[in-house]
Length: 303
Image (tube, rainbow, N blue to C red):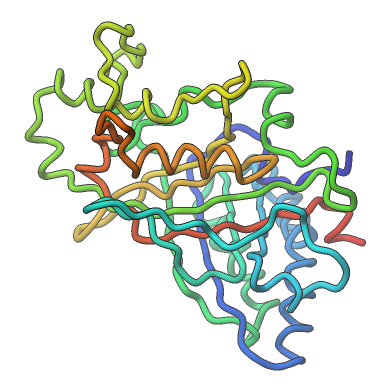
């Protein structure tokens, strides 16, 4: 299997940038943007060599509607537009994205330097749709106060979950879903801790999953822990909190060998089942962006 991009498999870092881009029209813009996408791994390696302690990594992903504009030949088998989900007051919208840039390291300044170099390579071929800085909060917690990513695969399982294995020339690549959630922290923080734990399905302080008798079917954990044919659906998450004085929330990022696991989990969060159960965490947070991209393997980009 070809090597994946450097930002996919390693454990999470303390700082990240999530930049989404829209392509400008014109043949010269497409040529420049395609070259810039291919340059991201090289630019990352060059900067990482000057500051190895930063543990710099990056991912460039391309959305379905942009693939043929940037590359010739076939496109990844399961690459398609983001599947929006809506029911009642619960929404997971699809928003315009052509290229995703995910930069992460232990130093915010190094992330900035790489973003600056990559944007210089893109030049006027793109416009920035969104630029969000994520940060590690306490001991890997979401701003709700609960540990995020507890169920992430470990060791060799990370590659098995995140990387395409059987779609040449895209083996070693990954499907990446991106959503930005805005939390209603004022409402959330009014809940007693025991009620927060019922919404999440884990204890707040100790990060222990509630037993089946205590965990309601509307808990977040209950909605996203799904078995198909005896196997649990899994994702490799690199989500990070973000925020400032006006709004705060979570940049949700998930890598997978296909889009299926994410799309199945999101549907169970948004849509009520026959008993009326949906993810009650959606009462306290809302998605404002949604995109699906494919992060090609290094051989594809460097070739």
